[in-house]
Length: 351
Ligand code: NAD
Ligand code: DAU
Image (cartoon, protein in one colour):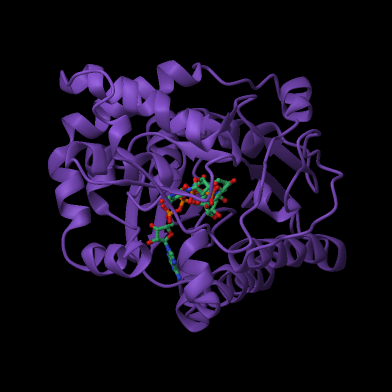
């Protein structure tokens, strides 16, 4: 990407987005980074305090569903690249409100694609639309096997169906209009700044407050966990060195059954909080399963490893310790995001 290029990062006030924004603002002073975020319940400007005054950074509050506003923003800034993370991202919420996911994840992505195409279609040289997606588009694995970039799409939740749809549109714009794009499909992220509706931060918050830990079904579901800082590093590499028109799978080489992960988390939390061993495990409560619950995700990350030399930098035990430390040191952050609407969501989802 050329010096002075204006780069639009969408969803930069959310969990993964804030780490991508911070990395780009700090490492690439030659770019102008514009962070567009609607500040939904999942977006939080407290995630960005350390870079909010940087010369190469600007925050814009706005909705990707508003096509006229998006067009105006592209006219003003002439973004030469987009890194698109803004999305509705929680599977449980997609089960109760699928339309919100279609609006933002499908229509919102189309608004960005259309604006990018309108500005550059006469000269796409040096431009890039980078779409951030998920391994959930591949559906579920059985006990064995891995998702590769060639695995057929078979989304099972409204969330993954909406992400799959947006992936298809990005690819179609590449084929039809020769729009230069790249895409990555990542496994489950964990780390600082994740909203406590997702498994790990939800359970950390509940352990702090001695609340039940609601394990869905029998807990024998498997996910492949990646530390968010390693995801941001992968995005940086793909953005700068990935081949146009390609998809890269990103994963942690790190599969855990939910119940084993929860027990490890409980052990580490007891140590950190100085509680007797077993105290947090006693909070585990098996609850009604998630409808359409995917059994297992696991990524074959050979392509990004071999082509771009990427690999995770921390083990799961290290990453989990860093994550727990962050939440314990940032209790004000946790209190801010769990007041108000969060309480209503929690009651509806778990009572
Ligand atoms: P998140 O929910 O924490 O953050 C999403 C951000 O997008 C929030 O800041 C929110 O305010 C913003 N946003 C939502 N709707 C918007 C709209 N209409 N207009 C503008 N901004 C809007 O999500 P996340 O976990 O950081 O995920 C980021 C991206 O990465 C998503 O596209 C998600 O599908 C993908 N992803 C997430 C994971 C994961 O484990 N969290 C794994 C793989 C891929
Ligand atoms: O795989 C990538 C995906 O990972 C991302 O695309 C999504 O945005 C992200 O939310 C995540 O999806 P999951 O559904 O796997 O994450 P979640 O943290 O919601 O759940 C992880 C596992 O834990 C899953 O098997 C469901 C289970 N779970 C979750 C919650 C919130 C519970 O047992 N209890 C819970 O309360």
